[in-house]
Every structure is written in structure tokens, then in C-alpha cells.
Length: 263
Image 1 (tube, rainbow, N blue to C red):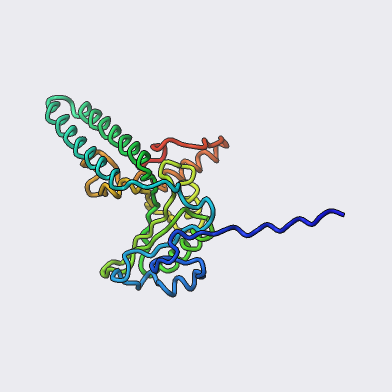
Image 2: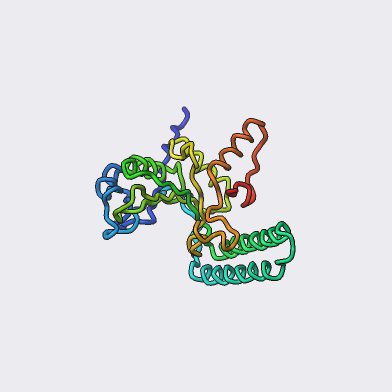
């Protein structure tokens, strides 16, 4: 008589935000979590963000130390040096055709982008996030889907929603992945968001690295360095996936960082 197959033990869960009042707890249902911290009405005076973490094994990033201060110091130096170089290029080549100068500036911005990426990896500042801006009237529904997807290991490592500061008709939700250069994982999370109906058919959504956030690179100032504030576009990434599927060609396991960059 064959021995009975032993039952598979339940997965061990771990919440990196255990005990934090601004975060989902393992003992909470999503309903209880939303009741305790309703995204639409929780005040910034209580907490600036409401968080939920993926509690599953492998759901979090590397446990190595994130050296934000060291990264930021070196990154700011790079930005200042690159800005000076861009000024020199323009001043020293004012008599050359604009196309020639534009190419020189483009090479400088590509070098800066790579240098920031290298330092970010060296200092383990490698997380990034898809950014959604649901309207207040739809915020609870969207945040519920995001929270459930994160807890159930269908999305990324963590997610957060901005609390109420007053005066805005939309709110920022960030859906994090462990490594901005892991385009396979970034794409996987995007496809899940798309399946949830959260990407939309308009301008889509954009992905920004924490590295750029720490360096205060935003849409209003990114052009000063020849950069884009976001490094991936949902429209371009999904179009690439659809194109690959229609051609029935195998996808590479790891794409280069610029493969899906915003144009």
C-alpha cells in the first residue's frame, strides 16, 4: 500500500511593515485594512502614505543594504557635472549646425543615464514603480485591487497610496518592483495591471526608478539634463509585447534598460 503524500505546508509569510500603523498587517483582511485606513479620507496629518507589502517568499528585493545617502551624494555630483558639460558643449559649438550639437548633447545625456544606473546598482538603489493617478471617486476601488494583487503575490514588492492633503481631484498610487533594470519583472507587473483594467487606453502609465526620485528628477526639470523623468512607458512596453506575440518570436529573458524607454 502506497504511503499517503504528506500535505504541503502553507507558505511562510513575512510582512516587512509588521507593526507599522500606516501599513497592512498579516492578520488583516483587505476589507479591514481599507476600513482602518481608507485611502480617500485618511489625512496626511496621520501619515503621508498608506503601504502594503508582498508577504510571500521572493516577493521582496535583495536584503542587502540600500545606501541612499551615498547614492544621492554621487548622483547629485554627476548631475551638476553633466549640466556644466552641456553648457560647455553649447557654448563651444555655437557656430556648428544644430543637428551636430544635438547629437553631442544626446551622447552626454546617454552617458549620464548610464552613470546613474551604474551607481544605483552599486548602492542597491534599484527599486522602481509604476505610477497611477486615479480620481478620488475611483480611488478606493483601484487601491483595493492594488492591495489585493500585492498581498496575493500577483504584483510587485510593495505598493503605496498618497493620503489626503486637500485640494486634489486625483491621488498617486505607486506599484513597486524590486529592480528597475529587470524588464521581465517590470513587464509582468504591467501586464497584471493591464489585466486588472488599470492601465487605460489613453496616455497609459509610466514607470520611474527610485534613483531618479532621490535625485529630484521630475518632468519639470529632467530636460535640463537631457533625461526623461520616467524610464518606461506602458504604451511602448505593451506594444512591444503585442508585436512579439504576433510574430511568434521568443522574448529574451533580460532586455536592456533602454528597450522600453519613453520616447
